[in-house]
Length: 185
Image 1 (cartoon, rainbow, N blue to C red):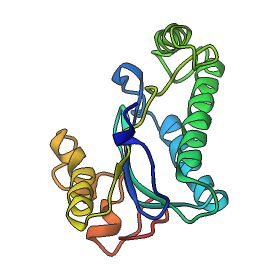
Image 2: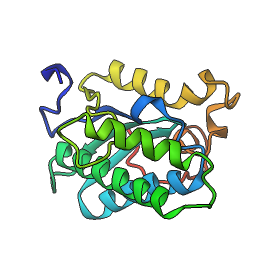
Image 3: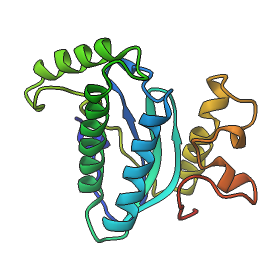
């Protein structure tokens, strides 16, 4: 990964994207979306994660995040990716004959790509790197905030950003509260 996209400073927020291997549409099912929400909530409560904005799409998640200083942000990101990867893999393994019709295909793909990458232990869920962009400029921050919230609109899922349930748009553009606690920018 280029040093251009690494977390260098704990003082600022970062725009971060995690993408599922081969852009698999995993987050079309509530079981998997819930894993992401639970992990982010856990990291907020126990690791010092500040979530400023977020959007969970079908194959990736966009975040604007920072650390309160309790744990370095890169450690929180590493732990979040590791936990969600393991947990979703467990759900798939336990779901024989259950809700996931793509179970065998997904597990095969995860295990095939995992064996090809020496950084993994038997399977891979997320693409290896994440794209962290330092948001030390208000213009960058506003641009990324708009990008995150308009992602479901651009994808054709909704007409209005606040209609996408798995996003912080409702927190920013209405009086309602979304699914995660936020530290608004």
